[in-house]
Image (cartoon, rainbow, N blue to C red; front, side, top):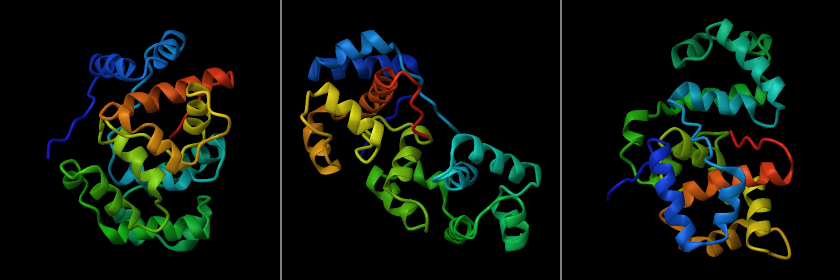
Amino acid sequence: MSIHTIENSQELEAHITALIAIEPRFAAVYSQVGMPSLRHNIGGFEQLMRAMVGQQLSVAAAASIWQRLVDAKLTTPQAMRKATDETLRAQGLSKQKTRYVRSLVEHDIDFVALESMPDEEVIKTLTAVIGIGRWTAEMYILFSLKRADVLAVDDLAIKVAAMNLLDLAERPTPKQLKHLTQDWSPHRSAASLLLWSYYGLLRNKTAVPL
């Protein structure tokens, strides 16, 4: 199986052009929002740990706790194995988040191997960790592995933007959205990026999925 990625803005532009040919309503969105940022990151343990730390917190609170962990040099598997729960709590990590991060350490994921796995196998591997759901796994596939065909159907902003784009009477369920957007493959990552930007335009703010 060949794995397709989007490495730069030129490749993203090609995917957007192909997407518009499939779904012309994206042309108006693209003209309004312009070229979305790829928001790539290097991935790995630290990236997933940061995602866990930030769950259900405001951007400011998540950033504050993460910076405390960074300052205390508590962002590696080795450091987490040595750290006590009391030490982590002192840096702002809740009991639940501590359980999540320890599960991530215990699973000892081969992050290099993820790069050659099909999307669904990556999702299966990541969601085996307590505290990682499908949405977080899809964000990793999209932004860390740079995959080209990821539509985050569980994402609220994606659902709202798609409802407007497709002129739906109500917000689609993940199952409905997956069905409605099957034809967008293999350009669904471009669709995700455009829809996030479109949501930001609709709400007059910057939509940040990660």
